[in-house]
Amino acid sequence: MKIAVMGDPDTALGFKLAGAHEVYSFGSSPLEIERANNKLKELVERDDIGIILITETLAQRVEVPEVEFPIILQIPDKSGSRFGEAQLREIVRRAIGVELKR
Image 1 (cartoon, one colour):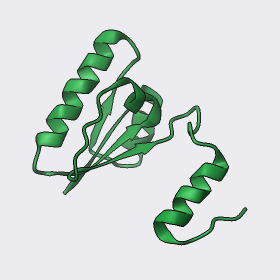
Image 2: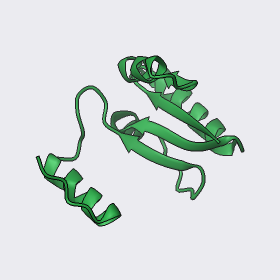
Image 3: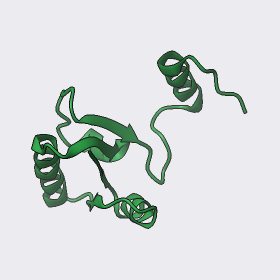
Image 4: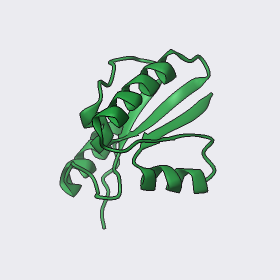
């Protein structure tokens, strides 16, 4: 199974440098958002994609389908997470039962 990444140019570049093969970069114009919507639909329909990582900012602007597979995870972009640090800690604690401390 492959991991696909969708996000802004800076996030996409970071994942490309990290060795990700399926990386898609989108701007913020209406045409780019339409392209992102189409790409997300295409990725969801592919059998070889297991995880789709999409930046939180992009996920707010596209229609993210409610599917069980592939797994679609929202990730922070260069501007940080839309969730606060405390909320992220709580999400991790509930998900895996581990409390993160600094």
